[in-house]
Image 1 (cartoon, rainbow, N blue to C red):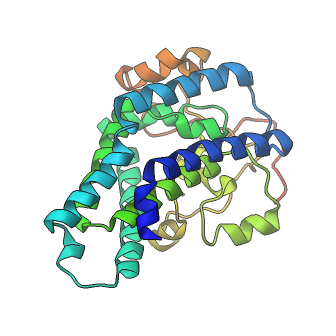
Image 2 (cartoon, rainbow, N blue to C red):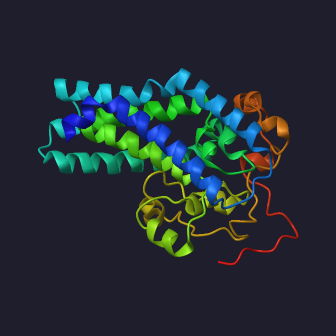
Length: 287
């Protein structure tokens, strides 16, 4: 099984990426969670354009670079798991858990360190929420987080198969968690015990400061529960909650150039600490 994952790493990653996009788009079309405030065509064009530019800069190389580093670690014997004797399956499981915990930690730092927040801010200026939000990352942020991921693989000496599986799980989880997909409440409560669901992660995109500083998890929701950043639902309900950042609501910030320029724009008080509150005059969604 491990050899199969390694041999077909690029194909598996491509299937996970494009397959998740197709499934998320179909799900949103059949059962959307929220009504979008802007035209879908312009939104998708801008986000997919960023999703193309981003790989050209870093993402096309970084997923495979993770695998290349894992292969080099195995051949040269560097990294923790090449000096600590563990069964292969256990080393792989621990690697996936540690890599996900690392993503949780770096996500919190992106929100807390002003310079890093500038890189991450474009992701939170989205006033809507669908699977293309998962493509809305500035290339400089992807370069930073991807480099941290590669370094983590090297330090761990993570098994190659675990790295391939981790990349496929991560991209699938990111597109699923950002999707505008309606899931029955009872099913969501069960799913969020093991994975980050759209309703769970949408809270993180709230315009409310306390809600935005919660639910940092990427693949697993456990770190938020253990480390005190778990918030089950937004105060104003998923259907009527306000998304985005005050000071970046103009249409120009939703264009491709606007997203690329975002880290270089002067910060405003509301965009660094206190996002705008909920819209007035809207009824709260029933739980």
